[in-house]
Image (cartoon, rainbow, N blue to C red; front, top):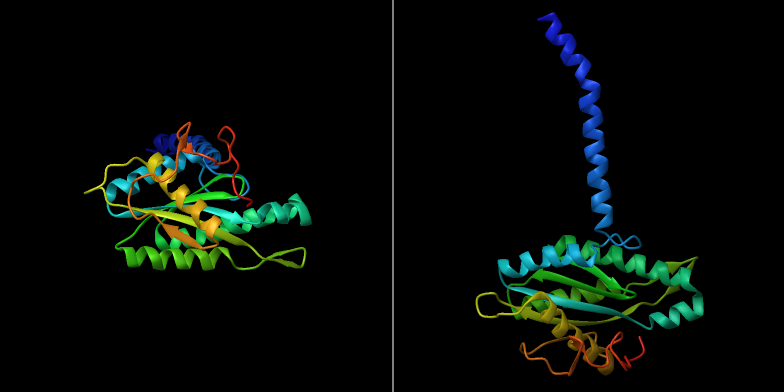
Length: 217
């Protein structure tokens, strides 16, 4: 019996080493699935989780684009711009925790989210909460910076609708752009029919499309 105890004790450091290795590996994998500036999910991780949310019941897809972000960068410098992006990421993460949402930084000053919604009234309330969370002042080196956002949303019900995540993001992006052009805080799609032309699977005129001339952010 004593020999068994000695052998078991000798194996403890090895087991602890393997456990530490496994934990470090898990942390590395998790870090690779997150945006380094905001800590939000990367696109692939978001797509994986968001697809499951959409399949599970009535949901909404949101696209969020900050307003006058280029002005902040040009006036206060890229460090201030990074601080605004990081603050927005934290606020979206807090909103996501309350609303059981999944959030991603798509790139630059653009974000997206998927969350459960029970009704159109619930969606409107969630959009209002999201707008309030994002538009709080951001303090950078003692200076308060005003942050605005244009948000587009589209409701989805897997029982009656047949759209993939990419198409829903495309529709929400249309509404975001319409909100930005009209000065509205947010707009929601009335149906699942695209209203704008498509270039390479994206809204015509969107940044990143050939000849795109997106409205000033």
